[in-house]
Length: 390
Image (tube, rainbow, N blue to C red; front, side, top):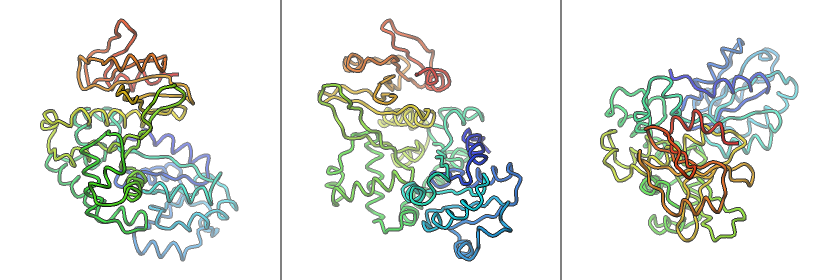
């Protein structure tokens, strides 16, 4: 099993809050983490899986506030299936605010957060468990190249071969399209449309999002495209990267970019079946960019926000790290050990006046150019440089 860095934080929250919700995509290890934490709390465990029909019926017949469960840790998986549960938990928690009483997991962010905001505000902490990060993978002797190609889902990383990985990811994607998305959000989605949309997003990974363009290709309306994007984002499958456009005095692009969050899913949707084929594929640059951005999101602190920046004249910066309305750092992402920078990069530096300027590359030695731009590999940036951005 790959040790997760989030475990320490969730353990801490379970000692401070009566309920903790672990959010994240399916098959990312939420239940495993919840069960591991319950063991450290050293309490009896009452477990419900709301995707199991028997447990779904059983929880409605169980008085969770009964005195016999007063010292239990109650784990409830896939709570988005029962939104009314949050209102039910509120008086139970108020009657006994003992920390770590409930550990909830959910695979659909909007419904879960809605339930929290309406019923459990101030009584619950929630964290997002992403797929295994590059840092976690390297700590368990998995190379960056393997992690980049296969993505961060534990079963994908553990596959014995690329063929086995391909079979797992194929069934994972098919299950999401044919069953999970509709089930998560309690609605019926057109399987063919959502499949085509996902493939189109993959082929344009990191592209500026225009709902009307997708709508014309898919034969649906722009609002429906936005609704489908919202579902994919809410299921933690795509990353919407917003544009930075605060008071620069220039005409800037304001539409977001969209990335497939897991690089393994992206590579499957692009038809790649081995790491060797990735190195020769036209999508390698966009894949590397999306991979780096996802690692940045997983590693950043809560004080920082991540954006991209693009002018109407085409000058673009892959990443702007901000604190409030202050741009602290700009980052260009290059899949080359000897990257070249465009005039647009320097124009944006003049616009934003960031304290830190980086170019992130896959591997190679770190160095600083004569104009103060640090070129560094991703592992070094995450381990050393990201912590210095203040």
